Length: 147
Image (tube, rainbow, N blue to C red; front, side):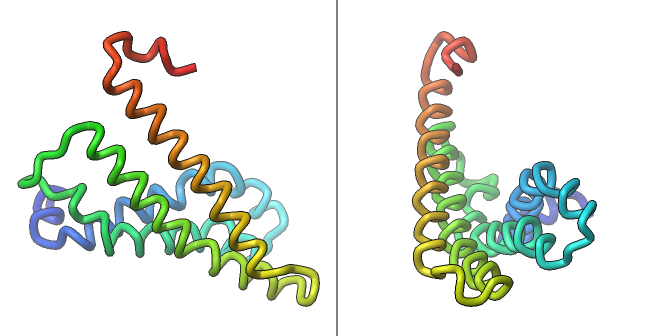
C-alpha cells in the first residue's frame, strides 16, 4: 500500500503515524544517546515514548485535516494547523510526563506545577516558531529573514 492510499483510506491513522514519528524523532535525537548510555526504561518512556504517544494522539484527533489532499490549505493555514496539533500534543503530554516524572521521585515533584511549566514553555516555543515560519512564508525575501 502506498502512502497516498493510506492517507486516502485511513486519514486519522496516517496523521497519527506522521505526527507520532515526528513527535518521537526530535526528542530521540536529543535524548537517545543519554538514555541508551544509562539503560533507563523510565527515561526512555519519559523523553521518547510519551512525546510520540502524545503527538500520535493529537495527530489522530485533529491532524487528519492537514493530510487530506481534497482540502487545499495555504501555507499559513498549514502552519497554524500544525501549531494547533503541536499545542494539543503538549496538552496531552504535559500531564502524562508530570505524573510519570513524579512517580520516579515521590514527594519531591509538584505534578500540577511541572505540567503547567511544560505547557507554558512549549506554547511559547510552538507559537513563536509558527509566527516565524508564517512571516518567512509571506515575505518575498525568503530565508534571509530567518535569524
